[in-house]
Length: 303
Image: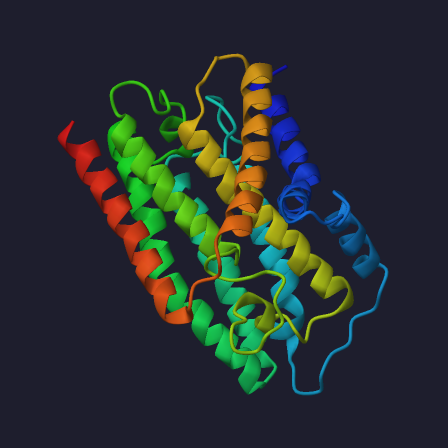
């Protein structure tokens, strides 16, 4: 199979399997708590049900509110098309795609914030304010972590950055620090514990969920599916940083899928054993992630 065919196959697998990762995390949480819990494929059922429903729009909203969910989901799909699974180039691979990959998450957040503000609701405006606040700390951590990997690879292409030896090759400390920083960003971007609780509906603690309260039907399906794609993309980045490479696309793909299984299990285990942080403590966690990424960049430059 050619490189283009492999890239298309890997993108198709990502688009199909992305909703499975939250299901794995929920199953782990249920097992740890001794509950029956949700079905493994619950996210698929929820998205399919919402796609069959109509959307309701407030008279105060404009086209911005209607376009935000679809454009945000499209941005997540593009991010997956940029992310390579192995040493092979991704479907949208070019020099500088690393910057595009990071920027697409900022675009998704911007669209979600605009949609929340377009409702004219002070409640959703509160959630948008919190999202913007935390993202101002999470984005530098992600960019610094990617810069540390790009500095070692001497390239701004994700294919070159992730084609390195993983945690081997004499740069294990920098890679582990970069992966740790990306994992903190992963928790923040996907509204997971300890930054946010995806299952909560308590007014004083909601961040992401409060911004999508007015969405319904197909629009809400776009938001939920886009969230699973973003989770898969950032989780895939962590796996790509840490995993070994074999040079065989089938083996690399299998290792990548196994890594995503570990991401789902680790997310569920983490949410089972730690509590959500107070809002005032979340910036400290994100600053710690930025410090880890900065240290990784320093180590990558001196070696």
